[in-house]
Length: 318
Image (tube, rainbow, N blue to C red; front, side, top):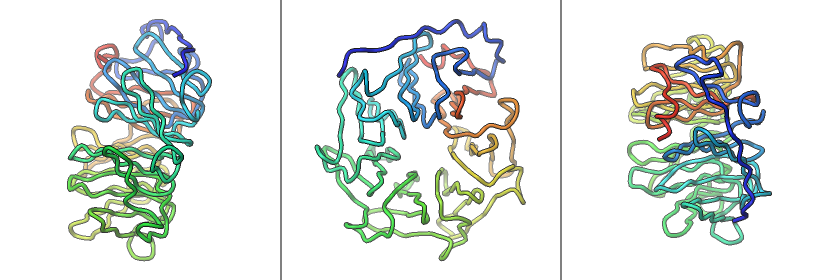
């Protein structure tokens, strides 16, 4: 790993005049530049922040900006992040990076069985197995990379997987620009606008509780798999101000957090609530909820840390 690291220091958060349940990080109060924030995750006392221009690490005081120039990152385009099995997984446009303590391992389609270098999503199932959605198929990672769903292997029409979620039954749900696939134990099925009530084939985000929630360009679709029933929420029948859904994630209270091109809402199955975290309208690119129920919300200009019950920032990252 290259040794050159840029370290920045942040002035105390109390000087920013922020409210007790919101913390804002942007170019005015931190080294975080106006980059589109694609993903966030936490690892003990470190926050990892992925953008299309590089990777940030923040320990509550010090910032590090990591790029191809000062680390082994194969690309500055960070598409996804996750802490799995005590390791940090970094999906980029040119390969997968696994960070274990200070060791960085880079995998691509030249030195491994990965079918493609574009790593879109990384998730862990209920048995601890890691699954990787790439631009050319779904990969299962154990002691090696095993392609389990692709055009060549399985005959699916589209293996450019954009989004990935795993339900309580370990069924994988994969979003593409031509519909959503379900996959389990070698059996797959495609749902699209031709064979279901899915409102749009562009599947950018997926959330799961007892059912499957699908974010599209035409609203949120709730699929009840056991009953083969679709429920659709959009501007006409909900408080959504736009049908363009960018991020879906559940918190520990079974509330669905919905990031859109015009702000953020929650839905508890009965009631919608709009959260006024910032002034005006902002496009939400990513939502990550940590183990303390803090929401890390990524936009183009800033990263917001939000908790309705109040944010104790230094406590939450320890």
